[in-house]
Length: 430
Ligand SMILES: C[S@@+](CC[C@H](N)C(=O)[O-])C[C@H]1O[C@@H](n2cnc3c(N)ncnc32)[C@H](O)[C@@H]1O
Image (cartoon, rainbow, N blue to C red):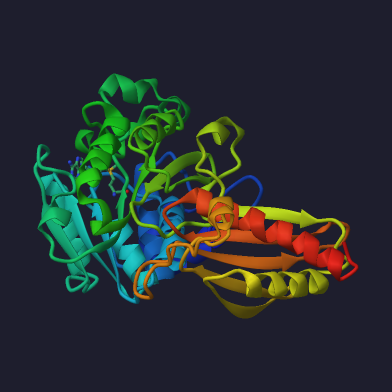
């Protein structure tokens, strides 16, 4: 569950029904005296989604009986993760997203545009009925200027709108049909848990695609290999944890090392999302990695490295040693940003390296490293922070922000740490 998701506690259904009267017939008081609804009733689920959209986002949503009912807390988790990605790696003030298979509700673009006034979307679907209803939902919220619906055919390229658009995109998102067949649906753990009503929430076109979700995401990946930096982040949700290794296998086959895996847990429901990029902006581990032990061997490599300095007496002394070291590494520019947290204040240094002057090879040859021109992308951008917490050694946290080559980042962190140890010794603190 995302820390910014406000639905981590069940809502007060009586209060919600006061805001949205169509929910009223579905609310009752349970044996503990709390207000409740029957989550196995599809009409109750639909009115709940409409009520949350109405009360919390000022959205007027019409959900038909014959199409998927999107639970707001679960859909919100994906948008919050995308917000994190955009904040970390996309510099522009206007943000363009592409929602593949938007469904009758157009829930993702509508919610996202309400949360983020500078975002706009292209949204596609192949289902006539969903397209018609999605357009209606967009119109009744006056979002036609920000969300454009495109009708696709099942055999079109899934990313077709990226091929034809003049503009670059910041992200692609997708909640794909998860299953490969009706038997696949009835075999799924979720179907067994929720009973036969579960399938009735979605039409076949929404739930089933040839080869299931892995094939669908593999199609998106293979198309992205042509489009590459036309979009910053390609992402998709996955309904089965077992699909993630298959997708990561494709990344590894094509040397795509800039990727992210996350998990959305909401009540009984667990979903995953995966994202990849052909650009050099890197995500911090808090966004790109999760701690699920079953997935550790396929996680992306760490972009956040903690080096500890047990002999440094304080973060202040560590920071002054670090500052001295950074002044003597060639081709670096360093800016400092002070920040205040509940635990105290700290300084983050932003380091921008135009050339690799610290690698053993560069130093052995005593050659000036190839330094890129000012307007060229840096070989490395990273942030560096000194931390001290009670009862733990002082540490330096390096976070890789930009660069093509992981070994450049890693060799930089080792070089700086070795020099900091020497500087601490000279200060009599090592
Ligand atoms: C699981 S539903 C998701 C609907 C909505 N985004 C949501 O999260 O509630 C999958 C959607 O993908 C659509 N779809 C299936 N194949 C597609 C394709 N090739 N291109 C675009 N949409 C597709 C389906 O019609 C369906 O609306």
